[in-house]
Picture (cartoon, rainbow, N blue to C red):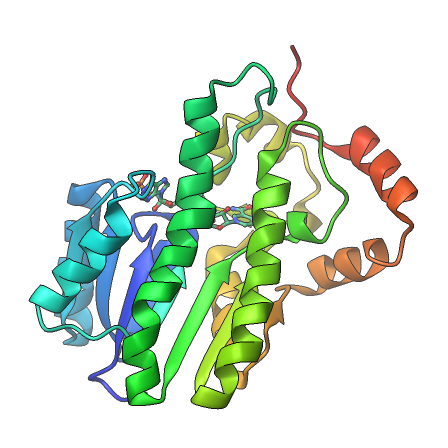
Length: 266
Ligand SMILES: NC(=O)c1ccc[n+]([C@@H]2O[C@H](COP(=O)([O-])OP(=O)(O)OC[C@H]3O[C@@H](n4cnc5c(N)ncnc54)[C@H](OP(=O)(O)O)[C@@H]3O)[C@@H](O)[C@H]2O)c1
């Protein structure tokens, strides 16, 4: 059991990997601040986890595509006297539509959610972590950051940014007791493909490629506690990532063009 007074801020805690992190950290005795847009789901989960584990569990509804949200979340925590010791930057989604015909506002919102907002939250929690000499940050990247790029997927570039910035932050901050890990899951059973509207294509993929969110979360948490800057959870994902990385750029491009199962069809 970890020290019960430590608090974890989890974004995207209303479903999937974020919810699995909330359940795992509650079991470990962490207090929680849960963030997502669906207030009711968050509040139900917060009440359940507080009752089950005797922890303090708060929820805060926020849309992280709003540039004001990261500051509002931290101000809310400060107002409640909550210090953030663990940050799980998890909220995210992907789209499958053509880049050129998708309105810029949609691209800008995705970048705000998974790049700017994620980075700002890291920046805002660091002063407190530095003062206490302890912090753990997990940023949700994806195996997409290590695999060949896919047509139209802004997501690949976004998750590559997350993979790289996490390693840079870890290098800077580890001497101060703060570990940063880029967690790079492969296909994980969550609501992700329902939101992306690729459920049919996803369901046709071989079962061996899929993991449960609980397994992803367990391996990600072990990685950050051990100070590993990158975690690719699951043996199959590790083999896929390791076999793709040494390929020449031209071969990766060719594979990405022919293999992306979520290509837009317009
Ligand atoms: N599932 C996979 O196969 C997979 C693979 C690799 C990486 N990942 C990454 O893992 C992370 C979690 O995804 P998941 O698979 O757990 O998907 P999910 O089940 O769809 O959950 C996504 C979470 O993000 C939240 N979210 C989405 N947009 C938001 C916004 N604008 N503001 C605040 N919260 C928002 C959602 O909550 P609300 O809708 O309530 O706001 C939800 O809690 C993502 O970053 C994703 O890219 C997933």
